Length: 212
Image 1: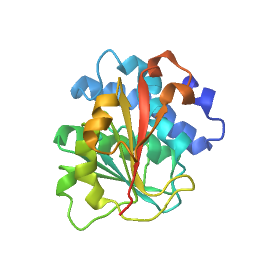
Image 2: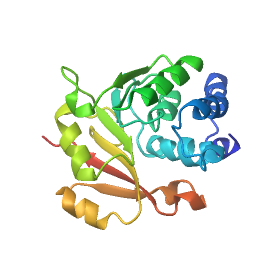
Image 3: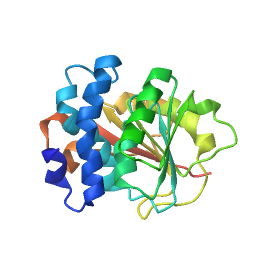
Image 4: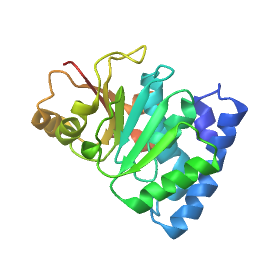
């Protein structure tokens, strides 16, 4: 938890309590369902929570905005972002039912009222649109955009960016960005420039705007 407070100093007591509870909850659930790599569970706050919050540093979602987390797994980046933005509505989607069960239980245990969890594939969602989509290491950029772009509504529900996709990825992304067909519009930031921790040296945050 200390590493979160190293970079953020203005959380409410309720938010600090919610973040603090995550470690025990995820360790407990990881004993039943392997939602986080065994080698990473002891670095939960750095490699999962802080990593997720890189999105919050660059994009301040408007109050009432609706955000979908594609392939959330055990709840990343969606749950840390939902704690950070209590007035934003988050829909966390994953095709694996047991992972969505963990999301539901963790959200309930820390009192998150702004999270809805859906078992299924994001491209199968009907009758629902969002302002932003977020994801973390789920699929190639081109696939993510193909799945989610029809569900993102035009507009701007943040001070910094028009509505679009924000995704966390690692490694050399040159080929992936080229193959996505989005090279002209995608923007990229080094997570290591946001949080100066060794774990983020090869991590990046990509943004694709919804233009039409």
